[in-house]
Length: 202
Image (cartoon, rainbow, N blue to C red; front, side):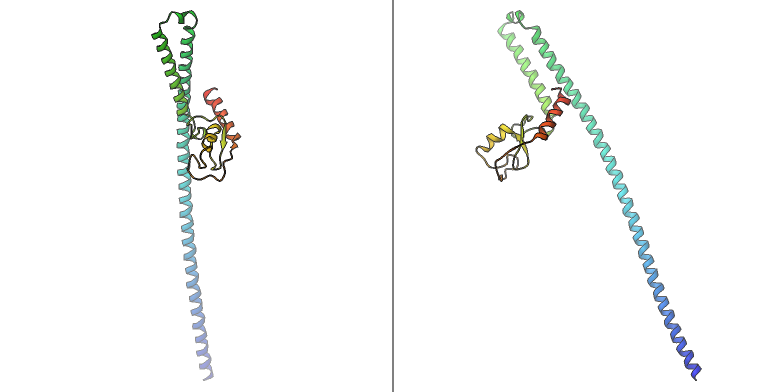
């Protein structure tokens, strides 16, 4: 009888051990499935990141090409404006002195109009290719003495000082300014001068 009890106890212990082993194996299988799923997600995210990086590089090359085209277009425009200006000056030089004395009032007026028109075209060509942050939003012209106001934006000194005589708001955002002091923007002034020297030959 005692042997039978021992066998029964052994079977109970064996079944319990097998149950625990099976449960542990099942948990291990679940962990393995989780690891596999994590790896799959990581690979998917890496693939997505690579694709986005490739797209970003492609977009950068497109922008770079557009910048190159814009630079070439500006160079051609600047050269054309310079040629027009030179031609206009040459024509005036040819008509200086005694030759001008022989022109009628109508001819002199036509010559003056032609030169004014040429200068206007040159000015428009130059302004059309000026970076927006080089132009004052008040005067819409290239800044020669840029200063920074309390709103963080830069303006032509004379224009912003004239504005602040009667207003305490930002010319750009129309929001109230914390103060009306301005600070000279040396960095922007240097960039403008460098751009003019490189692009306009001034």
